[in-house]
Length: 519
Ligand SMILES: NC(=O)C1=CN([C@@H]2O[C@H](COP(=O)(O)OP(=O)(O)OC[C@H]3O[C@@H](n4cnc5c(N)ncnc54)[C@H](O)[C@@H]3O)[C@@H](O)[C@H]2O)C=CC1
Ligand SMILES: C[N+](C)(C)CCCC(=O)O
Image 1 (spheres, rainbow, N blue to C red):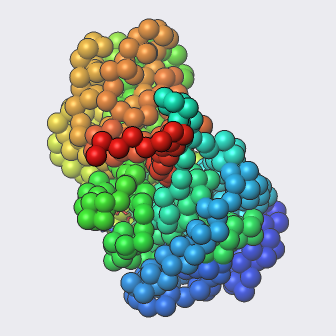
Image 2 (spheres, rainbow, N blue to C red):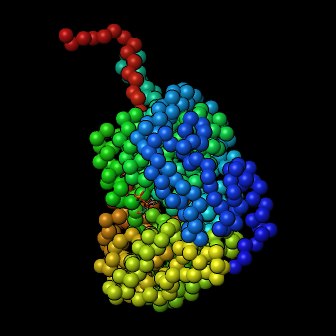
Image 3 (tube, helix red, strand yellow):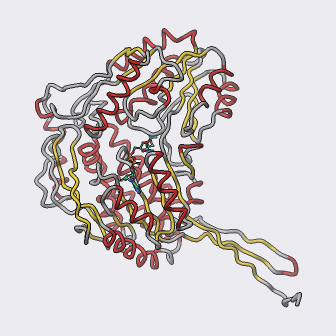
């Protein structure tokens, strides 16, 4: 497979301008990064302490593209102090002043869309096609909260005798953002945009697997005019994350990641009485009724399972299909899945790139092995994929997999796989499918395909899930709140709802008469 040079070449000089001093081009297999990955006080720098080294990979080739220095307690403290100082200035600005800066950040992201998407693809392994969509959602998120910043307000309440009260919506202070590796730039924007719009500062820790693009976001914020130190990046894994959560000057933690880590975050937050937002895992149901548009339902099932190599928390991986259309639906889904173009994620026509790393690929492979042992039938894919291009030979590829003959008690149906694996489950009645769909510890998302509007609304109303789709799946307008029920977490990102989670309400009670003391 040959990289079409004309397609990629125009990006190279612009990427060099963005990341000066790098020996890089944007072609797969050629990127490397020597620059520091921490960001504090408005500049990239090496951490003041810590220093444990992690290798950062390009999933498409399996190459090491950067070395990550993990931040220690001192560096985390410096980042928090830097944020605290910037908070003093930022929190005093009016909503409209914050709006202008956030709009400028959105504009810069839009301008640099292709470069940022390229960085995301190189570090995450997802196709450039998808990465561009992620970057679009990211700047839209900033625009959306920029728009809200100017209208954040409290209320005025009249009390007896001319007295009155009013409420003020105030920021929390320094917020910690901790991200997963599947949507590195987008996750950072989903947290930073509402946080900054409300007047907070942020210290963000990305996943050590995908540390690169969020530093670009930090640079863009500075360029757009946020006070230096308002948005800082600390790099590292578990220990760095713990220092951040336990820091006494961190007022709130917003976390995206796995359920077990979510539990630990909540424990740490409990000790400091800190509010948390938890965006955790899922095993969401997608219900296909026989009266659906089959073509839309098949498209929906692919959207629900195979974006970002299936590494999506809200994926509808339990696909319940009404028995009447099971065979037709399955045949079509398998046919379409087999046609998904896998390979070099920087090629324009690639639709599935590489999984995040070797251990994760092995984990997904093990789920498929176990599914077979438990009686599921591999209808397509599931095996490793080795691209023809020699430079991609050590990449972490697999073919997207559809499992038939599944039952609700199988591990592949119960546990989050976080890979391109769809399980198909037949059902007969609405009542039965709703009960089975809800029979999970998770509750992130759910979907239904039907032409019967009453049934569609009845079913989503009965689903125990925070984000439900009717006749589509995995679209993410930033205007709509996103978040889970049950073990999938709580708090909301996006939409007006997120404002609640990045601000606090102060009530001011004003006496216009004399004090009538009871003493
Ligand atoms: N609901 C949502 O919006 C999303 C949920 N996820 C979930 O995330 C998981 C995959 O992401 P991973 O990065 O593997 O999750 P993870 O839980 O291992 O790590 C997430 C982040 O937490 C940090 N971390 C790990 N242990 C920590 C600790 N004790 N204290 C503080 N920070 C700590 C990691 O370094 C990373 O930045 C999946 O389960 C997936 O469902 C992923 C994306 C979106
Ligand atoms: C953008 N979307 C809806 C496909 C996924 C967002 C949640 C995640 O970070 O996994």
